[in-house]
Image (tube, rainbow, N blue to C red; front, side):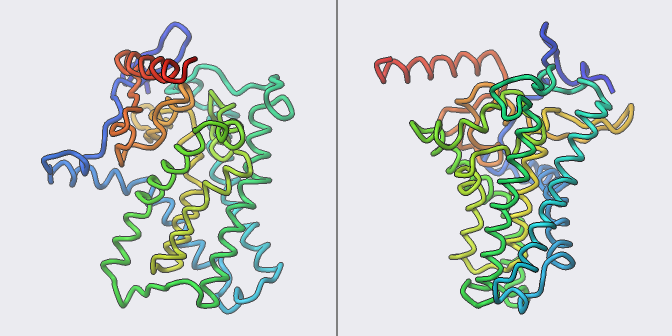
Length: 331
């Protein structure tokens, strides 16, 4: 599959898709029902459906019973940690193996033509991938698992509001469908805060060492950022929901960064087919730092003037905004 049919490559070899990021039709006025209906399958398939499937199967077969989780025991806590490590290795390692080790499509559809740094003192061990893997497996997954263990213990002991499917089936399903939207809203709020003032250097600068991100970059963060990032599950401490909602949210938070940082616009299957990873919007955030703090379903960046679609016009708006901010600070 020829990437020049879908985008352009500059003199440095960097690739930009022809199709610009667009806001979801649910936020376009006046309401356009047909566009929303055409958009909905792409919202559910393939990625959100895949994350939910993993969450559902993990809840059924790889999670101890609530009776078991009424008391803290190393056996079931280690089981959850091992399961999350396995899922992370499968998802992140799978993307990395196919695209960065096998390099099965070389730089076809790769935004940045360079490969991850392997001799850069900025990174732990001098290697971008090694640091990313270490921070993901040794910090990210334990923090994810700690939130999950606490959530299950609270549910098992009746300390959290609980929703049964039979009592409110429509609300139950609606909350499953909206869980990625909540994830996006929570991500934007936390992400925007940690870009402010000293918090950026204390909390977020580690993640932004990955100017040219790869799959393992997604959860390569400081410990404080991991704690904030996975805190979206705390909504279950207030809103009556089922544990499967919590599992879906945690799995989504744990696994989706691999896809959103993969660095390729599409994963080529054969000469005629490819899976769209649709992560150009967030790639631009890593490239320019002060744009695209959220994702595209909720157009928060458009509303607050920080959206960037990869165009020269967006570049000009960004530079004017940054210059005005520096002038206002007297720098």
